[in-house]
Image (cartoon, rainbow, N blue to C red):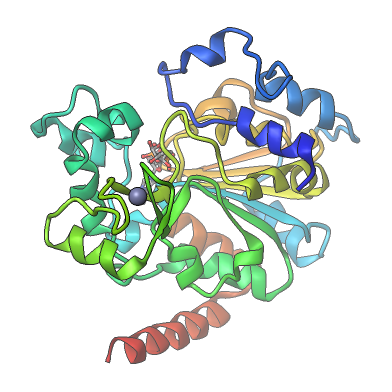
Amino acid sequence: MALWARRAVRALRLWGPGREPAWACRPRIAGGRTPISFSAVVSSAFGNGGDRKKEKLFLQDIAELIRARACQRVVVMAGAGISTASGIPDFRSPGSGFYSALQHWDVPYPEAVFELSFFFDNPRPFFSWAKNLRPGNFRPNAIHYFLRLLHDKGLLLRLYTQNIDGLERASGIPGSKLVEAHGSFASATCTVCGKPSPGEGFWAAVMEDRVPRCAACTGVVKPDVVFFGEALPERFFLHMVDFPTADLLLILGTSLKVEPFASLCEAVRSSVPRVLMNREAVESCAWRPRSRDVVQLGDLVDSVERLVALLGWTEEMKDLVQREAAKLSGQDR
Ligand code: OAD
Ligand code: ZN
């Protein structure tokens, strides 16, 4: 990757609502450059140009655009809401979200679990959460398979996910089509010496409620999940080519509360329809709606099934889900 891009990757660090790190508020010298805000990058590099079309769109119109192949470079932004149907709680849903459950733990505020300073002090809440997410514990659901079908039909330009549960991969979407923006459990690294840690040892420790330690230096091993303040994976930079060339953006199951991921929804051209499917309206889609936005509120599985029906893909979806479920059951045996 070019040097300028590496520097810029360093400038793109994760932050959440109201918890912007100090560097985000003041200019900072980083590799000889002053980082600029992500939204400034977006508006200067991508602009909001393109033909502005004013007519109001509905889900049916989106289905027709896809069927007519007027939309065939679909970019998807996904969050924890796409995995709740697989049994994995999201973060911020009141009552059921992971952050609500933390009220009973010794944690100063929920996001602290994903902050390095707290992790070094007390890594146990993070590993208790991670234990539940061990690979193979959960299966993809209809939403993941809908995205797989988009890929099979050659329509998926890229799937940007904040999820670290690996269910997009498990549904059969190839790594080349994925940007796991908040990292994954696929690899782990020693927080002291920086050595990669083999998966088996890591999971054996986590499953026995032990903090995984590095074989070389006994430092705490952390999975390569992006914590607040950490740099995003280099693949995140694909957004610079994907979003300006997308012709449809699907935003699924996310509160859009965490940057810089959230701001990606501003990076498609203004002529490009954005479809938000979520339980409630969120962030920029609620505050700064565009004329071609489609907001489909309610349960995500219902919304996706509705879109699949409008597309005429219901039978194909059933076949795919059955085939893949049989494959996964075979692997379990
Ligand atoms: P959130 O928990 O913030 O948001 C999930 C969204 O999905 C909420 O708006 C829910 O209402 C919605 N939702 C959940 N289940 C749904 C369903 N069945 N049907 C429709 N909508 C549903 O999760 P994210 O936006 O993914 O970061 O959170 C972003 C980041 O915050 C995470 O990646 C994580 C967290 O701190 C890190 O771990 C670094
Ligand atoms: Zn080490």
